[in-house]
Length: 347
Ligand SMILES: *Cc1c(COP(=O)(O)O)cnc(C)c1O
Ligand code: SF4
Image (cartoon, rainbow, N blue to C red; front, side, top):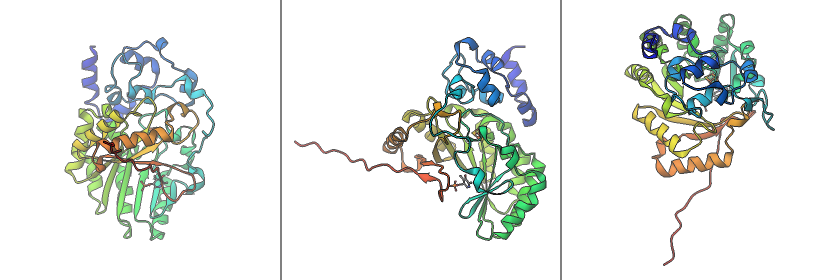
Protein backbone atom coordinates (compact mmCIF):
# COMPACT_ATOMS: atom_id res chain seq x y z
CA UNK A 1 0.00 0.00 0.00
CA UNK A 2 1.36 3.47 -0.75
CA UNK A 3 2.64 5.12 2.41
CA UNK A 4 0.34 8.10 2.05
CA UNK A 5 -2.76 5.93 2.10
CA UNK A 6 -1.48 4.02 5.10
CA UNK A 7 -1.01 7.23 7.02
CA UNK A 8 -4.42 8.61 6.14
CA UNK A 9 -5.96 5.40 7.42
CA UNK A 10 -3.87 5.48 10.59
CA UNK A 11 -5.04 8.97 11.50
CA UNK A 12 -8.69 7.93 11.30
CA UNK A 13 -8.11 5.46 14.16
CA UNK A 14 -8.80 6.37 17.78
CA UNK A 15 -5.95 7.36 20.08
CA UNK A 16 -5.61 3.97 21.74
CA UNK A 17 -5.23 2.29 18.35
CA UNK A 18 -2.78 4.95 17.18
CA UNK A 19 -0.78 4.39 20.34
CA UNK A 20 -0.76 0.63 19.76
CA UNK A 21 0.60 1.28 16.26
CA UNK A 22 3.46 3.49 17.51
CA UNK A 23 6.95 2.68 16.23
CA UNK A 24 8.70 0.43 18.71
CA UNK A 25 11.87 -0.40 16.85
CA UNK A 26 14.49 1.63 15.08
CA UNK A 27 14.44 -0.43 11.88
CA UNK A 28 10.81 0.47 11.16
CA UNK A 29 11.36 4.10 12.02
CA UNK A 30 14.46 4.30 9.79
CA UNK A 31 12.62 2.64 6.95
CA UNK A 32 9.78 5.14 7.31
CA UNK A 33 12.24 8.05 7.29
CA UNK A 34 14.20 6.67 4.30
CA UNK A 35 17.33 6.41 6.42
CA UNK A 36 19.82 3.62 6.53
CA UNK A 37 20.38 2.32 10.04
CA UNK A 38 24.07 1.72 9.35
CA UNK A 39 24.62 5.44 8.77
CA UNK A 40 23.23 6.33 12.19
CA UNK A 41 24.88 6.10 15.63
CA UNK A 42 22.07 3.79 16.78
CA UNK A 43 22.66 1.59 19.83
CA UNK A 44 20.78 -1.63 20.60
CA UNK A 45 22.07 -1.49 24.18
CA UNK A 46 20.62 2.00 24.65
CA UNK A 47 17.30 0.79 23.26
CA UNK A 48 17.40 -2.10 25.72
CA UNK A 49 17.81 0.30 28.66
CA UNK A 50 14.92 2.46 27.51
CA UNK A 51 12.91 1.30 24.54
CA UNK A 52 12.10 3.29 21.45
CA UNK A 53 8.52 4.50 21.32
CA UNK A 54 7.25 7.02 18.76
CA UNK A 55 3.66 7.58 17.61
CA UNK A 56 3.31 8.01 13.84
CA UNK A 57 1.78 11.47 14.27
CA UNK A 58 5.10 12.68 15.71
CA UNK A 59 7.28 10.73 13.26
CA UNK A 60 5.26 12.21 10.40
CA UNK A 61 6.62 15.64 11.34
CA UNK A 62 10.24 14.49 10.96
CA UNK A 63 12.10 15.35 7.78
CA UNK A 64 12.68 12.30 5.61
CA UNK A 65 16.29 11.51 4.86
CA UNK A 66 17.64 13.76 7.60
CA UNK A 67 19.71 11.86 10.20
CA UNK A 68 20.02 15.09 12.24
CA UNK A 69 16.33 15.89 12.35
CA UNK A 70 15.61 17.63 15.68
CA UNK A 71 12.55 15.46 16.34
CA UNK A 72 14.36 12.24 15.48
CA UNK A 73 17.18 13.20 17.82
CA UNK A 74 14.70 13.31 20.72
CA UNK A 75 13.68 9.68 20.27
CA UNK A 76 16.56 7.76 18.68
CA UNK A 77 18.56 5.49 21.02
CA UNK A 78 22.24 6.23 20.36
CA UNK A 79 25.64 5.14 21.61
CA UNK A 80 26.24 8.42 23.47
CA UNK A 81 23.61 7.34 26.00
CA UNK A 82 26.02 4.74 27.34
CA UNK A 83 28.69 7.32 28.17
CA UNK A 84 29.23 8.24 31.79
CA UNK A 85 29.05 11.98 32.49
CA UNK A 86 30.05 13.43 35.86
CA UNK A 87 27.14 14.90 37.83
CA UNK A 88 24.49 12.74 36.14
CA UNK A 89 22.47 10.33 38.30
CA UNK A 90 19.29 8.28 38.48
CA UNK A 91 17.22 10.66 40.62
CA UNK A 92 18.59 14.09 39.68
CA UNK A 93 15.66 16.11 41.00
CA UNK A 94 15.21 14.32 44.32
CA UNK A 95 11.72 13.06 43.53
CA UNK A 96 12.22 9.85 45.45
CA UNK A 97 12.68 11.75 48.70
CA UNK A 98 9.85 14.21 48.13
CA UNK A 99 7.13 11.61 47.64
CA UNK A 100 4.67 12.33 50.46
CA UNK A 101 2.90 9.04 49.82
CA UNK A 102 2.49 6.79 46.81
CA UNK A 103 1.71 8.90 43.77
CA UNK A 104 1.88 12.26 45.56
CA UNK A 105 4.76 14.74 45.36
CA UNK A 106 4.26 17.69 47.67
CA UNK A 107 7.44 19.59 47.08
CA UNK A 108 6.31 23.18 46.51
CA UNK A 109 4.02 25.41 48.55
CA UNK A 110 0.37 25.24 47.55
CA UNK A 111 0.83 22.68 44.79
CA UNK A 112 0.82 18.90 44.78
CA UNK A 113 1.83 16.81 41.84
CA UNK A 114 0.16 13.48 41.22
CA UNK A 115 2.06 10.79 39.37
CA UNK A 116 -0.98 9.44 37.62
CA UNK A 117 0.89 6.91 35.57
CA UNK A 118 4.48 5.93 34.92
CA UNK A 119 4.13 5.56 31.17
CA UNK A 120 4.18 7.87 28.20
CA UNK A 121 3.08 7.75 24.57
CA UNK A 122 6.61 8.58 23.49
CA UNK A 123 9.96 7.75 25.01
CA UNK A 124 12.08 10.90 25.01
CA UNK A 125 15.75 10.02 25.30
CA UNK A 126 16.46 13.07 27.48
CA UNK A 127 13.84 12.15 30.04
CA UNK A 128 14.65 12.35 33.77
CA UNK A 129 12.16 9.54 34.25
CA UNK A 130 14.10 7.02 32.18
CA UNK A 131 15.93 5.46 35.11
CA UNK A 132 13.40 6.14 37.77
CA UNK A 133 11.09 3.58 39.39
CA UNK A 134 8.00 5.55 38.42
CA UNK A 135 5.93 2.42 38.18
CA UNK A 136 6.47 1.91 41.93
CA UNK A 137 5.45 5.46 42.71
CA UNK A 138 2.50 5.82 40.38
CA UNK A 139 -0.91 6.53 41.75
CA UNK A 140 -2.67 3.22 41.17
CA UNK A 141 -6.46 3.09 41.47
CA UNK A 142 -6.01 1.66 44.96
CA UNK A 143 -4.05 4.75 46.12
CA UNK A 144 -6.34 7.37 44.65
CA UNK A 145 -8.60 7.71 47.69
CA UNK A 146 -5.64 8.27 49.99
CA UNK A 147 -4.30 10.96 47.66
CA UNK A 148 -7.68 12.72 47.54
CA UNK A 149 -7.85 12.51 51.33
CA UNK A 150 -4.40 14.09 51.60
CA UNK A 151 -5.42 17.02 49.41
CA UNK A 152 -8.67 17.36 51.35
CA UNK A 153 -6.80 17.52 54.64
CA UNK A 154 -4.23 20.08 53.52
CA UNK A 155 -6.04 23.37 53.15
CA UNK A 156 -3.03 25.24 51.85
CA UNK A 157 -3.10 23.22 48.61
CA UNK A 158 -4.67 25.39 45.91
CA UNK A 159 -3.53 23.55 42.81
CA UNK A 160 -3.31 19.90 41.85
CA UNK A 161 -1.05 18.95 38.98
CA UNK A 162 -1.78 15.79 37.06
CA UNK A 163 1.52 14.48 35.79
CA UNK A 164 3.45 11.28 35.27
CA UNK A 165 4.62 9.86 33.01
CA UNK A 166 1.74 11.26 31.01
CA UNK A 167 -1.61 11.64 32.77
CA UNK A 168 -3.50 11.71 29.48
CA UNK A 169 -2.72 8.02 29.06
CA UNK A 170 -5.42 7.40 31.64
CA UNK A 171 -8.73 6.63 29.99
CA UNK A 172 -11.55 9.19 30.02
CA UNK A 173 -13.48 7.31 32.65
CA UNK A 174 -10.64 7.39 35.16
CA UNK A 175 -9.72 10.97 34.37
CA UNK A 176 -13.29 12.11 34.73
CA UNK A 177 -13.69 10.40 38.08
CA UNK A 178 -10.45 11.91 39.34
CA UNK A 179 -11.37 15.39 38.17
CA UNK A 180 -14.80 15.01 39.75
CA UNK A 181 -13.27 14.05 43.08
CA UNK A 182 -10.80 16.93 42.92
CA UNK A 183 -13.51 19.37 41.91
CA UNK A 184 -15.40 18.56 45.09
CA UNK A 185 -12.50 19.86 47.22
CA UNK A 186 -13.50 23.38 48.22
CA UNK A 187 -10.09 24.91 48.85
CA UNK A 188 -8.74 23.81 45.47
CA UNK A 189 -8.60 26.60 42.88
CA UNK A 190 -7.07 24.94 39.86
CA UNK A 191 -6.39 21.64 38.22
CA UNK A 192 -3.32 21.66 35.99
CA UNK A 193 -2.41 18.91 33.55
CA UNK A 194 1.12 18.46 32.19
CA UNK A 195 1.13 16.39 29.04
CA UNK A 196 3.07 15.76 25.87
CA UNK A 197 0.13 13.96 24.24
CA UNK A 198 -1.37 17.08 22.59
CA UNK A 199 1.94 17.23 20.69
CA UNK A 200 2.84 13.59 20.07
CA UNK A 201 -0.60 11.94 19.96
CA UNK A 202 -3.13 14.72 19.28
CA UNK A 203 -5.88 12.16 18.62
CA UNK A 204 -6.09 12.01 22.45
CA UNK A 205 -7.79 15.42 22.43
CA UNK A 206 -11.36 14.30 21.87
CA UNK A 207 -14.63 16.06 22.69
CA UNK A 208 -15.31 13.40 25.33
CA UNK A 209 -12.01 14.18 27.02
CA UNK A 210 -12.63 17.93 26.93
CA UNK A 211 -16.13 17.45 28.33
CA UNK A 212 -14.70 15.62 31.31
CA UNK A 213 -12.56 18.71 31.97
CA UNK A 214 -15.21 21.33 31.45
CA UNK A 215 -17.67 19.65 33.80
CA UNK A 216 -15.41 20.87 36.59
CA UNK A 217 -16.05 24.27 38.15
CA UNK A 218 -12.30 24.62 38.80
CA UNK A 219 -10.04 26.46 36.41
CA UNK A 220 -8.28 24.03 34.11
CA UNK A 221 -4.78 24.68 32.84
CA UNK A 222 -3.05 22.43 30.34
CA UNK A 223 0.70 22.70 29.95
CA UNK A 224 1.82 21.06 26.72
CA UNK A 225 5.41 20.00 26.21
CA UNK A 226 6.78 21.07 22.86
CA UNK A 227 10.48 21.50 22.15
CA UNK A 228 10.59 22.53 18.50
CA UNK A 229 8.23 24.31 16.10
CA UNK A 230 8.42 21.34 13.69
CA UNK A 231 6.42 19.33 16.26
CA UNK A 232 3.37 21.47 15.58
CA UNK A 233 1.43 19.91 12.70
CA UNK A 234 -2.18 20.27 11.53
CA UNK A 235 -3.37 17.51 13.87
CA UNK A 236 -1.74 19.22 16.83
CA UNK A 237 -3.31 22.55 15.89
CA UNK A 238 -6.74 20.94 15.59
CA UNK A 239 -6.38 19.63 19.16
CA UNK A 240 -5.32 23.06 20.48
CA UNK A 241 -8.35 24.64 18.84
CA UNK A 242 -10.75 22.13 20.39
CA UNK A 243 -9.29 22.87 23.83
CA UNK A 244 -9.27 26.62 23.41
CA UNK A 245 -12.84 26.70 22.15
CA UNK A 246 -13.84 25.22 25.50
CA UNK A 247 -11.92 27.79 27.52
CA UNK A 248 -8.93 25.67 28.56
CA UNK A 249 -5.84 27.81 29.20
CA UNK A 250 -2.78 26.49 27.36
CA UNK A 251 0.88 27.02 28.25
CA UNK A 252 3.99 25.37 26.88
CA UNK A 253 7.15 24.20 28.52
CA UNK A 254 10.28 23.05 26.72
CA UNK A 255 13.53 21.43 27.64
CA UNK A 256 16.71 22.96 26.28
CA UNK A 257 18.43 20.19 24.32
CA UNK A 258 21.71 20.17 22.47
CA UNK A 259 21.19 19.44 18.79
CA UNK A 260 17.44 19.98 19.08
CA UNK A 261 16.67 23.54 20.11
CA UNK A 262 19.92 25.09 21.42
CA UNK A 263 19.66 27.90 18.92
CA UNK A 264 18.05 31.33 19.35
CA UNK A 265 16.36 31.23 15.94
CA UNK A 266 14.80 27.85 16.71
CA UNK A 267 13.62 28.98 20.14
CA UNK A 268 12.21 32.26 18.80
CA UNK A 269 10.37 30.40 16.05
CA UNK A 270 8.87 28.06 18.65
CA UNK A 271 7.64 30.98 20.78
CA UNK A 272 6.23 32.76 17.74
CA UNK A 273 4.41 29.67 16.47
CA UNK A 274 2.99 28.85 19.88
CA UNK A 275 1.75 32.37 20.42
CA UNK A 276 0.20 32.54 16.96
CA UNK A 277 -1.85 29.58 18.21
CA UNK A 278 -2.73 31.30 21.47
CA UNK A 279 -0.25 29.44 23.67
CA UNK A 280 2.00 31.21 26.16
CA UNK A 281 5.61 29.99 26.50
CA UNK A 282 5.95 29.20 30.21
CA UNK A 283 9.24 27.51 31.04
CA UNK A 284 12.45 26.63 29.26
CA UNK A 285 14.05 24.00 31.45
CA UNK A 286 17.69 23.19 31.74
CA UNK A 287 17.71 19.43 31.41
CA UNK A 288 17.64 17.36 34.58
CA UNK A 289 20.93 15.53 34.82
CA UNK A 290 19.69 11.95 34.44
CA UNK A 291 22.05 9.11 33.59
CA UNK A 292 22.14 8.49 29.83
CA UNK A 293 21.24 12.04 28.82
CA UNK A 294 24.62 13.83 29.08
CA UNK A 295 24.96 14.33 25.33
CA UNK A 296 21.89 16.62 25.39
CA UNK A 297 23.37 18.88 28.04
CA UNK A 298 23.57 22.59 27.26
CA UNK A 299 25.90 24.48 29.63
CA UNK A 300 24.27 27.14 31.78
CA UNK A 301 26.35 29.90 30.19
CA UNK A 302 25.07 28.91 26.72
CA UNK A 303 21.52 28.78 28.03
CA UNK A 304 21.84 32.28 29.45
CA UNK A 305 23.27 33.58 26.17
CA UNK A 306 20.34 32.03 24.27
CA UNK A 307 17.74 33.57 26.57
CA UNK A 308 19.48 36.93 26.28
CA UNK A 309 19.30 36.71 22.51
CA UNK A 310 15.58 35.85 22.72
CA UNK A 311 15.02 38.72 25.13
CA UNK A 312 16.67 41.10 22.67
CA UNK A 313 14.47 39.96 19.79
CA UNK A 314 11.05 39.11 21.23
CA UNK A 315 8.47 40.87 23.38
CA UNK A 316 8.87 39.85 27.02
CA UNK A 317 5.81 37.59 27.04
CA UNK A 318 7.32 35.39 24.35
CA UNK A 319 10.48 34.70 26.34
CA UNK A 320 9.99 31.61 28.52
CA UNK A 321 11.43 31.62 32.03
CA UNK A 322 14.73 29.79 32.08
CA UNK A 323 14.62 27.47 35.08
CA UNK A 324 16.18 24.38 36.53
CA UNK A 325 14.91 21.83 38.98
CA UNK A 326 17.07 21.54 42.04
CA UNK A 327 16.69 18.82 44.66
CA UNK A 328 15.62 20.37 47.95
CA UNK A 329 14.84 23.85 46.56
CA UNK A 330 11.56 25.62 47.39
CA UNK A 331 10.68 26.20 43.74
CA UNK A 332 12.03 25.71 40.27
CA UNK A 333 15.16 27.82 40.22
CA UNK A 334 15.15 30.79 37.86
CA UNK A 335 18.45 31.30 36.11
CA UNK A 336 19.27 34.97 36.05
CA UNK A 337 21.50 36.79 33.68
CA UNK A 338 23.47 40.01 33.91
CA UNK A 339 22.03 43.25 32.55
CA UNK A 340 23.01 43.96 28.95
CA UNK A 341 23.44 47.56 27.97
CA UNK A 342 23.94 49.37 24.72
CA UNK A 343 27.50 50.60 24.43
CA UNK A 344 27.45 54.22 23.28
CA UNK A 345 30.10 55.12 20.78
CA UNK A 346 32.44 58.03 21.54
CA UNK A 347 32.49 60.52 18.72
C1 LIG B 1 7.46 21.43 38.57
C2 LIG B 1 6.73 20.97 39.75
C3 LIG B 1 5.62 21.68 40.22
C4 LIG B 1 5.09 22.91 39.54
O1 LIG B 1 5.95 23.99 39.63
P1 LIG B 1 5.53 25.36 38.93
O2 LIG B 1 6.71 26.24 39.13
O3 LIG B 1 4.31 25.84 39.63
O4 LIG B 1 5.24 25.07 37.50
C5 LIG B 1 4.98 21.21 41.36
N1 LIG B 1 5.42 20.11 42.00
C6 LIG B 1 6.50 19.42 41.59
C7 LIG B 1 6.94 18.24 42.36
C8 LIG B 1 7.18 19.82 40.43
O5 LIG B 1 8.22 19.11 40.01
S1 SF4 C 1 7.82 12.21 30.94
FE1 SF4 C 1 7.85 13.71 29.27
S2 SF4 C 1 10.00 13.77 28.62
FE2 SF4 C 1 9.71 11.88 29.76
S3 SF4 C 1 9.27 10.31 28.24
FE3 SF4 C 1 7.32 11.12 29.03
S4 SF4 C 1 6.77 12.70 27.58
FE4 SF4 C 1 8.94 12.30 27.28
